[in-house]
Amino acid sequence: MYRFLIVIEKANGTYSAYSPDLAGCIATGATREEAEKNMHEAIEMHIRGLLEDKLPIPESHSFAEYVAVQ
Image (cartoon, rainbow, N blue to C red; front, side, top):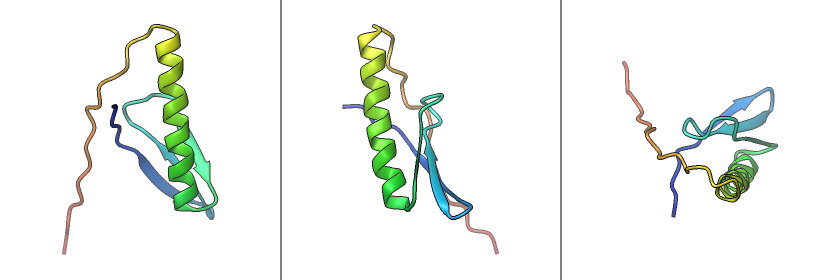
């Protein structure tokens, strides 16, 4: 199993998603949930393509953290 951080951003009434560890792997959706679902599918397709091309699967080096500021 592979695990990748995804970032979902809201822009102009739609949502976009990407993974910092998978260059060029992006997805969009009308809702946050749709963008997340589409990104999951995009990552699966991206990984399948890498495996078919006998290319290495990148390791996930990204992490996220919230910072609270007063």
